[in-house]
Length: 539
Image (cartoon, rainbow, N blue to C red; front, side, top):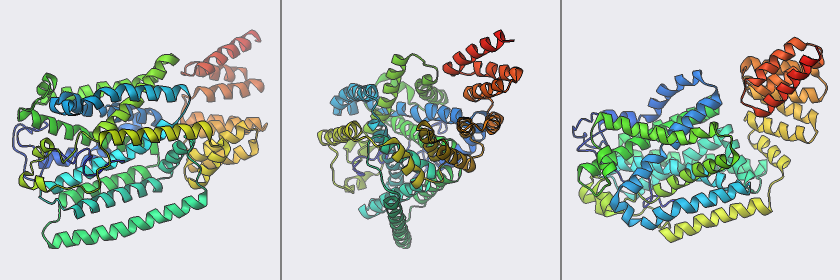
């Protein structure tokens, strides 16, 4: 979706010589570093390690869903703000792309709102896939920065870096049963035709084989560079930390949503740092910036803290959805959130173009700057890019409108291609139960519980199905197991209370009805109040 030479988000950023993030207390950056050896190790090359060590211990204080929502709001959504500051705070950049910056927000918002009002999901998979590309281009941009600082601007090196990054990242996505399931779910919900398990396995093996070939070729090429004295060790360490962290957080971590949230945090931290470095360098050199940007991006620790607070504040907009119950306001809020994501990916695709004279100036690569050439053809010019993006959206909207996938077939396909993802079995079980196929649903719920015994919701759904089959004692056991894992599930308390009341255990039933009232589920609260009144009047 991007031209990797003209549109890398971060293949355009300067070596810091005038200021840094905090100690950057005005000391010049060491040669070849973006900020300094220490800050590059914390914010860029070592960002995955930094976030894993700092954020993982915090996951024990929240439930996985709450923890991931917290990080995705304040880090992932919050990191859109620095890019917008770059877009609207750089007078020269704004003048160059004025039309795009003025038209994109309302057009994207109205498109998002239209999709939401019609109950269509095409924009979700569109943004989902765009996020993957955006992530790759950010990582690839950092690799090219470290090469450019050493004068390594060979198109062959750039293509090899691009190939190793994209093939390995896609391989890790496919190797992650949860990421695989979520990506395909978004695609199928949007009307994209189902892949048969046989076709998927062929594509999977082809990807793994291609990745092996690219890896061997990359190792051989870097051996050649090493012999020529051109090997970029910092870039290779950056690649290693990115791939190792992606493997650990996507594949090895037991709770995928926790791993994905931490992964998104390190991507965001890298972005915070690179935008700070770029803008502060422009301010230090007296470029045409708005007053707010000239004030904010100065080498002061207090200003770094204000910068971080602004990012967290913007992230709080996403977090608001947890507390919004008015349907109209919630619809507008969700449209704004989706618009922010799309604008972030779109803007990052063209505001960091390495071939721009002003951008090359801030790369600090001097005379070799004129030697930078396109790695791939330039097919992303403004009108052309707008046309193909609009075409993708139209196609996705048409697919879901006129050729939606059958729910049961979709769920069966997902369970077949992602058999190790417990959520694929849970959702298939839910679809089967809704169709009255309780025995088949029971098998899927049991598989979900087997794959993840600590998933409370799977035990709740198992209990509902067992109750539907008349196996009440087993259903009570399933609800009690769910509540032993997570005592704050209103539906589990309510369903358990119903079964206990049917067996005459009124006191225990009342206790669980009271617990259902403490939750945030309005339906459970309403039904629990009615049940409590009925039981009370029958005493």
